[in-house]
Amino acid sequence: MNDAGDTDPQPELPTWSLDDLYSGQEAPELTADLEWLRAEIANFRTAYEGRLVQLNGAGLAAAIRAFEAISERLGRVLSYVDLLRAGDINDTAIGRFAQTTREQVTDISTEILFFTLELNRIDDDVLERKMADPEAAPYAPWVRDTRVFRNHQLSDDLEKLLHEKIVTGRNAWIRLFNETMSDMCFEVDGKENTLDEILNLLNATEGETRKSAGYALGRGLINNIRTLTLITNTLAKDKEIEDQWRGYPNPVSYRNLANHVEDEVITALVGSVRHSFGELSHRYYRLKARWFGVDQLDWWDRNAPIPGDNDRRYSWNEARELVLDAYRGFAPEISEIAGRFFAESWIDALPRRGKAPGAFSHPTVPSVHPYVLVNHHGHARDVMTLAHELGHGVHQVLAAGQGALMAETPLTLAETASVFGEMLTFRAMLARETDTECRRVLLAGKVEDMINTVVRQVAFHQFETLVHTERVGGELSAERLGDIWVEVQEESLGPALRLDDNYRPFWAYIPHFIHAPFYVYAYAFGDCLVNSLYGVFARGHDGFQQKYLDLLRAGGTLRLRELLAPFSLDASDPEFWKRGLSVISGFIDELEGAS
Image (cartoon, rainbow, N blue to C red; front, side, top):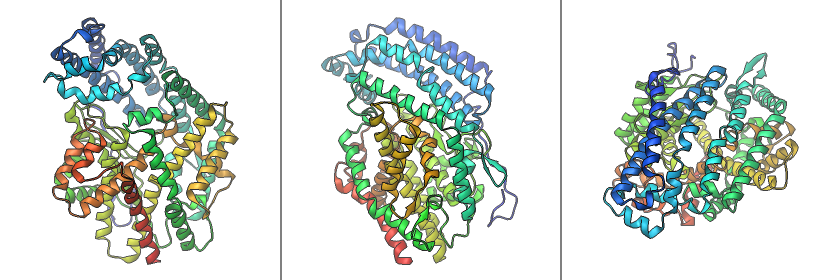
């Protein structure tokens, strides 16, 4: 891939090596780990089942350490399966291997379910005395977070049944969705495109290309709409049934509990963003329509390069150096960690047929390292995506010291380092740009990314809420799903965007709706949080970098209030969210002033 600004042939885009997990599907280490798990879990069950309440603090600590070691090994196996599958969803042999291995892991891990169920049945005062032991005390955050689900816990037999059936239930429907999306081809100008490629064409310079890409995506979704509608309805019903059994009051309640936030907090966040639609997305798209000399933009032009954008492309080397330099200017340690992803083959950046679309950073397990997947096409947005995912990766590396049980953060905090990394990279790119028009292009791109992160994700959240609520009354048709989609899109995008019937099926390709219901609000949460956090940094807060590194190293051991306290921030204050949204509004002010 050659691009402007780099006349030398581009080096081959990297693909990752999974050897640090396992050298292959037939690796003896993989077989040995599965055998170790069977034996270790059998011993664990013999030693601890039915006895947790009788253990003293040191004994409980020993049990938790053994449970953590088992969890780490299980995570290693499943991480390898996930990453191998993401590299080529179309490979049927990999698909069979992944399904067989997941079934083995489910069978094995069923035998350890008793541990957290039994832990949650211990009375608070009894457990408090055990956790006061110096050996047990370090695990207090994990015990705290495990016990938040105790009021929604079912009988042991039901928990075991749900766990065993997941491979033929929810996970099977997710697999069907992934394989359906991966098998789709979208034809534009005689060329067949993958989903990732067709989404990239929606950012093309030529308007006809964007229109053709949008219509091709719509046709592809319509051709598969019966399957995608069935998947959506089935998973929504499946969630409703389990939520009812567990006693969750709202469809979003489980996610909020897992994220350690109350339903009311997310209601307030969503309400604040929806109240700001007019000031943010509606105003920006009016401005963009004016740049294009029209009253309304067609939906396929929503992410179109603005007039004056020369479609600047960034080679992989340029993207790497931009991100690493931006990170280095903030904190050399962060840049050094991010650099390892490039040097040690922890990144897969090559777009190809069968590869998972989009981007992610998979944390794997603390004893190994994260892996980053991106699809690099060379746009400025791809540089931002690389910065985002490396932010996740750095966070995961720093938090690994907390161990397998406490390294993971709730979703609301998981987006902090990624969005902060984007902001660092954007500010660095903007600072080095002297041309007024190029600065305007960069600023408009950042505003669009922030609107996509905040406004669009809250609209996605609204779509999920309406779908899950209405699904209680019966199965939803593809037409009704399209109605809900258009309703929330019109509200969030505003009158400067023209939507037509070809846009109606676009709900069907959003993977978060399938993979992780109600995940999406975490992006808006994270963006607003980072905007406030970055403001503290920009004002020269004393010791900010070290406090930020401490925040990342904490993993899941601290709650949001504790993490933000060193920066004198309070997310329960409505002004906190207003400050975050005002950053986007301020950028739009700047663009309006330059127009």
